[in-house]
Image 1 (cartoon, one colour):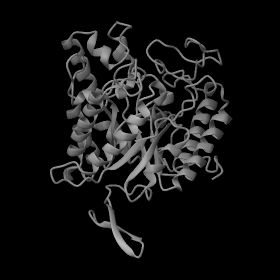
Image 2 (tube, helix red, strand yellow):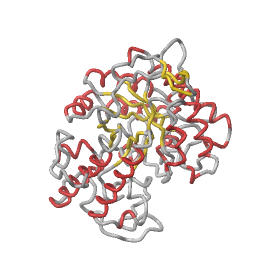
Image 3 (tube, rainbow, N blue to C red):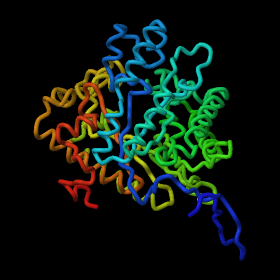
Image 4 (cartoon, rainbow, N blue to C red):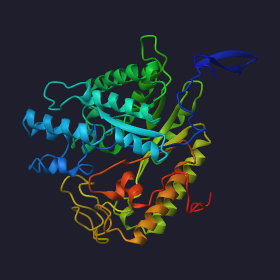
Length: 423
């Protein structure tokens, strides 16, 4: 259907016009999204690049805020530029394309665009984002842009920029600043020069209502505002980016049923992030239970998609433990081996994370089965984007390492265990 064509609905014997149909830049639904996140690059994350944090010699540096605040400007800027220049390069995009993947999700924080008085952040990420979009275009890879951290923090976790209280929804200034950053992203990437590469945008990553009771109603209103911003970016540009709305960790997706109204919303899906290792019960699951649980989630996704809202699994992992260094925050330990305060020992982390050199053949076989179970499950709707493309030392989280060490196939459509989920 042409961009700008009006959908017509038969109502009481007459046709009435409603929301404009969107000429999307990728055939979402018809072609499955198969992709990877570029985690830990333009938004720092200790478990992705622990060396960047260890090199500071300061254990109080736990996120991008403290990385900037607890070092001199010159020291932090030099380290950041070196990281931006070297951690992800065009060679990564060539390898991603070579692995048969069609999307990358690129997280970026609000501070790349807006630093207010008292905020210690550094800038320069926006230029690297645009450079990455060019690399993606060179190699036929599509891009989803993800607003990963917003003012005040939407979840209180280190990958929001600042670990601590989740105060994003606590004042109107934070919300206004977030909308302004989204306008910048929408106006830039809705331009026709990006039409063959930037397909989609996530206006807010992982808002966590259990951290602050104001977050859920604020997120709902912001999602409505975001739809208008992305669909009408201004300057005569057509807003045809696909929009993925994070589900705010709501197990009951019924809260988001209003998004199924096709007379108001076109070109959208829920974005859900599925991990089963961030609880004491989750790390106790057997390998068979990990697999069956994810297959069950695939059935839930398929059922939900039948209600007119597609589901994209924008983050997931094939790691069955939380053993990766700094995964739970710098120097916090793991639930699996009982080193995280308040946790109980389940088993040794030896051979469960690290470079992969010590992974047993049976463990690699499980990783392949788990990879296949999840990709089959997540393809019950829009598709999947794995977290994450590369890590320094956590091979159990690295798509790149999985390819190199053989538990991920070079073609994501290849199956050894084709009926692993029974659908």
